[in-house]
Image (cartoon, rainbow, N blue to C red):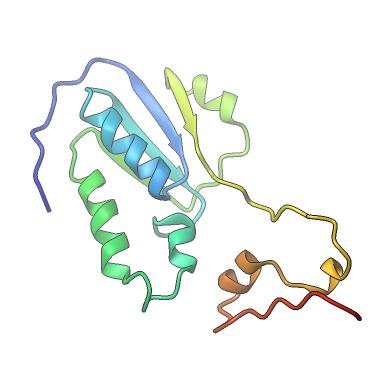
Length: 139
């Protein structure tokens, strides 16, 4: 893992909601621009939906090393297990800005016949299905 030099604080504080790839990337970039960053994640461990990808496709040590790279900065703190209900409230807690990049939590309906018989791919992954079969046709 490459090491980046710590940057002096610019006095600004940023809250990042979520600890997936977009959020940890934003946190790493901001910290190396001098911002003090706190990542808030409702899950116990970082990685976001990458944790839904089977380990044989995305090894867990890759996810962990990406998060470790971000947290190696002295300007980044990770608060796990905390759901942020009100993003604007963070602004009253001393943060200058809030980054929200939590992705799409629900599947998009495409309104085709038989859609009600299918299982969204993300639901299958999250529930740990070994495979998901999507069949569209006659009932």
